[in-house]
Image (cartoon, rainbow over all chains, first blue to last red; front, side, top):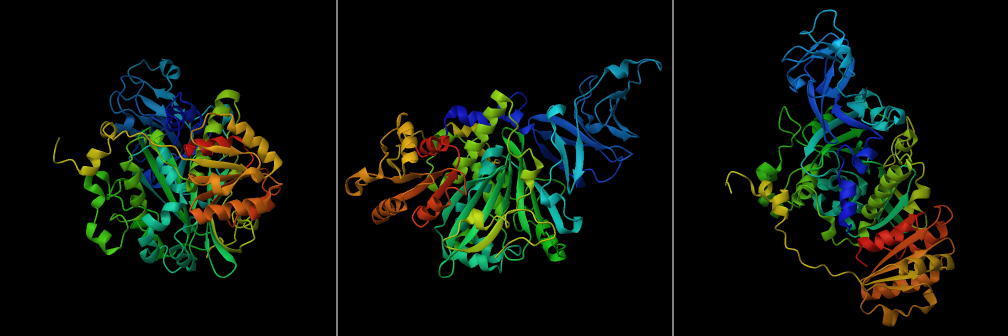
Length: 428
Length: 145
């Protein structure tokens, strides 16, 4: 349960809100690189933290992210055309640079300096891995670029997809921290999904449906350990890192690639889920890549030409009651991503957390909310930079590991949950 | 209401959320028990806040499982680096016999409280290791204690 005012504090991310200011301290995914595949190509709309923007790649290859609407009459620059170093409005030909500076106002005299007095809001846009990253905060507070491992391994070792989720960002993120639902909602996937099946760890998962949980503070956020019985005198631990504001990783299975999510508010009732898979030491196989593109693992099967999952609320998530009855899927919805999204969207656009009945197995969620609340208040009241801004906080991994019962998961697995370039992830 | 809109699309709107049944939610009856002197101070401070049916025990020796667990929903053990693992174990076993959930909140720097974590791990289904005392009240609030 959260008090109504705390729920408001944590869920609202538009300009001028406290949580919005927190998000504006981080580099955030704004688009996939595939959305702007070539210099001079068409611009794309980007909505993030309640701001409508347009992204484009100039003919010289420079990336820009600027206010979507022309300063002249407010027409959308989505209809515009990339010309040389800028984007020209389709209405009256005003032209803007990648940083939002107006370069030309064709209706003004040739020797006019009027254009130099016009500027649209512009934000930096940087390509790292498969993702275009932006920073919407004050330039003086801009941190170094992100160092998440998935965007720094060779290109053939990683894959990133994106899907639209029609709910507030926080209830989506909380699904990534809540390990206790996996043995239920996703139980079918452990047996059948090509990106999960065959791992020894799956047996521990399916043989012990009542895991114990441990939550430990980390510099950038949290580690949540889910513990199940393994062989005599040992526990099987699945360790989930959470880095503020909204990055989570899923514990891996066998030699399958490791995966995770970055949850980015579009506005208060919608978010983008950037989902990645990577292997620290080898290229993804063609079969793995195809499975990811087909929506297996933690990816979604999107409607062609869009980032909207085929299993969306307008089609009742294509629920298959016969498959549910047969036990192939626990909820009748195909795919882990939309199994989660269907239930999170069913809570309503912004879930009313005053009506929850949390139990002690929800301590990971409780602690994550508390971390966020403290970070928001420290930034708002004292200007303290929040956890997760420092790129050192990004160098974490999830892990799946068997440990003697007497050992602490977080201390014995210290190396396993740290990025070790060129070394395989720890997985069972 | 158009038939062309799916059941899920119709049900997931903010407008429809207003029609959810608003039934009073009963709080949980928690027992919050300190396992060492430093934890006792924390429990005393937290106990001064307004709570529902929960009861606070700064001294684990004064906790009588037979009487105190009769109407309890959850037991929350508070510990620091000097936790009395035996006392925690005895309370946890009494809880297990009655089907009462046990959670542990261990306050302190991770390495300094490693022994306390090891002592509670066999019994507490949920453990949180934190340096922030405010997390105790946050957990109790979240659980409607």
